[in-house]
Amino acid sequence: MAEKPELAVVPHVRLQQKYSVQQYTSWGYGPGMWPYYGGYYGVWAGAPYTYSTIDSYTEGTLILDFVDLSKQKLVFRGTGTGTASANTESNAEKIKEAVKKIVEKMPAS
Image (cartoon, rainbow, N blue to C red; front, side):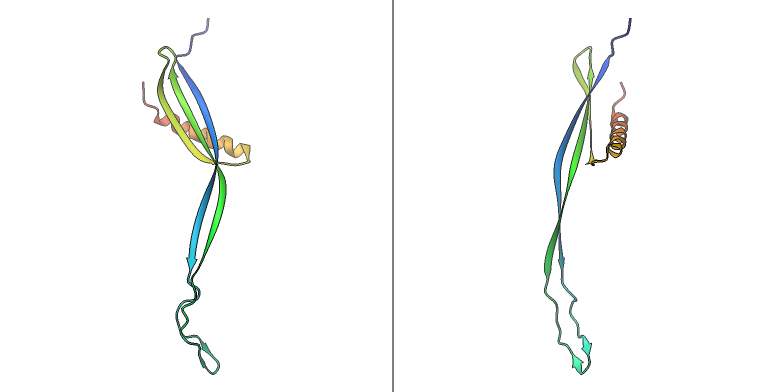
């Protein structure tokens, strides 16, 4: 007869679309006298301009609940977050690494 397990691991996964916005300001060429044939241009500080970049990505969160089955009580909850991609092999490696880090943080019985 097989023994009843004492601990259950209940996984939860959440995917969420995220956006990263970066804003940059540039001041052109900067102040100075620019020589040319026949004289100098006057001091020109340039005009500031601002531009932004927006990147979207999918954030994945893995939650592992470790439950004591005899007491029906949550013993430990571990989470890991990372960027998910369309590459399933890459995601599988990230999940393995997240599980390893979560288990390392689990307190000793």
